[in-house]
Image (cartoon, rainbow, N blue to C red):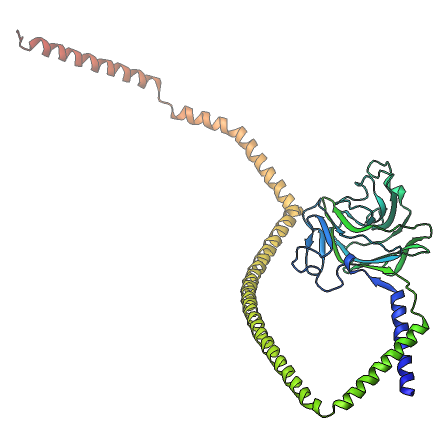
Length: 428
């Protein structure tokens, strides 16, 4: 009797725990990713999600905008809609980029999917947008926007003024993931970041039947936005079963256990042999499964050894390249010492050139050149005239030489005429 009461109490406690769990948040698997290990079975598609643009799907994250090139857009959207009036999302992301990089990230909760639009390029939408961007010039901000489908954000003269809540938050290059939580309850709407309040409102009440989405856009100097987890939980409060039903269920279980115990006693020892056969068959099946696992383990080990060999060869190549670079470092150090010596020589030469002794030498040289120039200009003309006058021949000698030359030519001509006149005549 005591055992029966204890079992009834335990069963009641289990039912109470189940009721409490049912009343807590329920994970919406069809609207979430990143909570089951690998995001994608084929590294192409995320189950229950559709994407626009060209995001890169990896095993642990989705790269919406790459580190390079810039001006890229991408988005992912849930295939189904959220139907619960109370929900919460836990979004983990990371943003990295250059010092003056730019871009924005949006978390959507809208009736329709809006491709890769941002809060500045979307026209009309019905729902909520949480925007993470460098607005405000304080390292970044997180803002909330609402629209009922009547306001055209794309043509609005000042979109920033439409935000209903915001907080400053430096989200870039943190070296860790940022945890953004958005929660809608029956009492209020609340946004927290890294477990710290960002903004909340008791006037916001978003209806059901909306898609969740994430979109990102990068500037020419791009920020890379990576989404790691997006977990949606909805709240429900089903009423616990009545106490009479709990009691009836407990009595039913007691009767079932009593009947099973009586049947076991009636069967007695005849059950031992069948139980042994079952054990044998079970052991045989387990041995076959173990053998298959061993074969798979052998194949896996062979693959691992092959990859290790490839890794070792890569390490050897890296080691050889490292040694070669170290040799080049020695040459570079020798070249650096030579350049240092040359720099010392240039510095000493510059000091000598800029010193007072060098200027004095230049002044003495300039004075010597001026003295030499004045001496040449004074004595050189006279010396040249004296040389010309002393080396020139006398005029009488020159006249007698001309007369002698004329007489010689006359004598040669007379001799030539005489020989021509005395030569015999030749007639044809």
